Every structure is written in C-alpha cells, then in structure tokens.
Amino acid sequence: MTRTIGILGSGQLGRMIALSAASLGMRAHIFAPDAATSPAGDVAYKTTTAAYDDEVALEAFAKSIDGVTSEFENVPSASLAILARHLPIVSPSIKALDTAQDRLSEKNMARSLGIATPDFWQIDSQSDLESALGHLNGKGVLKTRRDGYDGKGQMRVESGDDARAIYAEMGGKPLILESFVDFTCEASFLVARDGAGKICHFPAALNHHEAGILAHSTAPADLEDALITKGQEAVAAIASHLDLYGILAMESFIGTNGEIIFNEIAPRPHNSFHWSIEGLDCSQFEQLARIVGGLPMRTPSLRGGANSIWRMENLLGQHGPQIPTLQAQDDVSTHLYGKSEFRDGRKIGHITYQLFDSDDKSYKVV
Ligand SMILES: Nc1ncnc2c1ncn2[C@@H]1O[C@H](COP(=O)(O)OP(=O)(O)OP(=O)(O)O)[C@@H](O)[C@H]1O
Ligand SMILES: [Mg+2]
Image 1 (cartoon, rainbow, N blue to C red):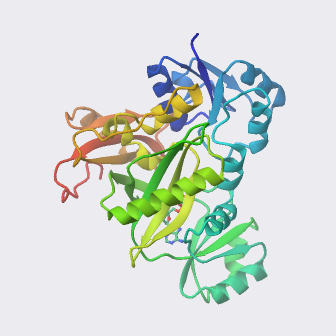
Image 2: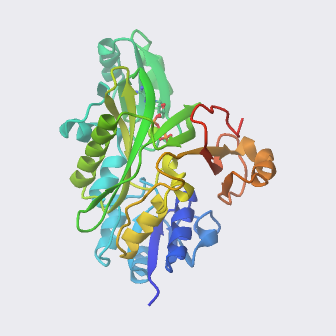
Image 3: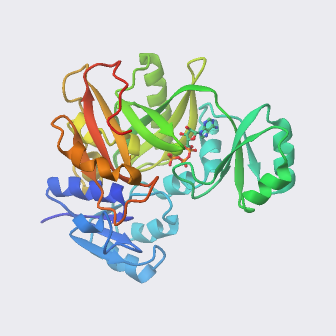
C-alpha cells in the first residue's frame, strides 16, 4: 500500500518534503488555506484548501493520510490536537509548536534547560518597555513574540531610546526585548528524533544574514569540535524536552568568548540546511518524510568526502534575472519554489554548490 503523508502548509518547505516523499515511494497531501495553487500543492498528490481551524476538513484530512507534519510553526496547535485523535504520527508535536510560536516561551525553555540566551524582557506595555530599556545596557533588539520571520517585526533599539515612540511603532503587540549579541558568527544545529526517541544529528551550518534575511549557509560549520558537541547537546535536550517527532533546528550565536547563545528554534526543515539535498546522502527533507512516513531514520553522511564544504545561497525575488545563468552552470544546483511572483526580498529558490577552497568568499548571487 502506498503511504500518504499529510503536510500542513503550502510553501517551499512543504514542496521539498513532498518531493522527498515521492522519491521514497510515498504520496503527499497538502492542507492549507491556499493549497490548490501553491509551491507545495503543485507537486503534491492531493490538496485540501481549508482554514487551519476547519475541524470538518481536518477530520477528513486525517482519514486520508498515514502521518502528518507541519512545514511551518504558526499552525494552531489545536489543529494538531484534532489530527492526533486519528493519527499515530503527528509531527513535530503539540509542545514543539506551542513553544516555537512564541519567542518568549522559546527563550524561557532554553534557560530552563541551562542553555545560554541573550538577556531578555517580556514587554506587554509602554511602562514595561521603559523599565526594560532602563536595564538594557547598550544595544537591543525588540521583537514581536509571534509571527515574525525573515527579520520582520523587529526593531533595533538602544538604552535611553524613547519608549513611547517605539511602543507606538510596534503596534501594541506582545513583545520581547533582547540584548544585542555581539557575535562572531551564527550557527544552526539540526536534529531528527523518531517516535522511539532516537536522536540523529546533522552537521551544523554557519549562517550569514543580510538585511535580516538568511543570505547563505556553509556546512559543515568550521567550529571547534567541543563547540559542535555543545550545540548538539543543546538541540538534543530541546528535542527531548519538546517530545519532538520529526526534525528541529536551533539558531544560535557564537559569542566573542566562543560560547553558544540560543536565538530561536524551528521545529521543521530549516533554510540553513537546504544544502543537505546535495551535501548529504539523506537530506533534512528525506529524514522528515521518513519519520512521518513510518520509515527508519538514516544517519546522514557528507557527500564529496569528509573534508568537503557545501554552500547554499538563497535566491530572492530580485535575483530572478540571474536564474538562467545559474541554471547553465555545471557546478551549481538550482532549486526553484514555483512562486507565483518574484517579489523583492522574498525567497524564490536557492542554489547549492561545493566550495573547493574554503577561503573562497565570492558568492554566485550578488
Ligand atoms: N539579540 C540579537 N542580537 C544580535 N543579532 C540578532 C539578535 N536577534 C536577531 N538578530 C539578527 O537578526 C536575525 C534574524 O533574527 P531572528 O532569527 O530572531 O528573526 P526571524 O525573523 O525569525 O528570522 P528568520 O526567519 O531568518 O529565522 C538573526 O539571525 C541575527 O542575525
Ligand atoms: Mg531566525
């Protein structure tokens, strides 16, 4: 019997999970408010176009699939709870979604597990902000607790700034103020965890952001072994704490004293691991499709030899004109997401290539 995995969400992550599922001989059924014509819907066996809180549609969806995952963390966890009544495999877990939807919950969790975070303050009013700005010693980042991505819903602030003007600009939403981390680099760690609680690590990635958006990732991360081990221990502790069923990435800063400082988690495939499609013999998407489809996990190993280095660069709307040139290059793999329009600053695809000289800092996308 052909197995069918359900995916909540219709974007590029769902698309790449669906493509991996197909390679494994499985089908993907996409559930989203815009499922029918979407990056994921375009490559799926079936789509359900419905709101995430449509109980009737969720019940019918559950009956048509063998396991489910969510390609983005802002699906209401109540929807996952409805699906859990009918399905043995519900990924990434209700606790993982609930925690990852709120930057404050994420940071409280990290702290409770003994993982270092920037200083942070919960901001629910202008006076909260006033007092937090008083404690902030220097620069900070003010963020909405929910719904931010690609640096949206964030603002750089400084102690002494005018709380009234800033609070008005952030629109009265629940906020978190974080101290600004003076980092040497940013690293992400990805872990997979199956239903039996078995953990599998992926090689870490080093990430470079431009204008708040991930520009490129390089992996395996050129960091000391002890640091990699520490990051892996942290992400594994988080995965266990959240009863993770699937995959989860932890974004972190590497501080000036070489310490790992937690930034945020994403309980789903992560942009900084897209290189794993070419760079590993089991990509993050395959691993997730395996877990959700009831197949055993694989231990991913690096393609191109133990010393190979892979780079992924994001293609944004403004890079559209470069696509034909990139697609003509022998040493570049180009992935396009089938987005209906190429908007500036929005991700439309990515490229992956092997770096043969680790000093090579020239990017193919400029
Ligand atoms: N406290 C901080 N100190 C220094 N830099 C920060 C801090 N918070 C965020 N940044 C910078 O902004 C980037 C985006 O922030 P964050 O990960 O919180 O937002 P996001 O909108 O979820 O981004 P993405 O969708 O790319 O993960 C970080 O990767 C980092 O480069
Ligand atoms: Mg981030």
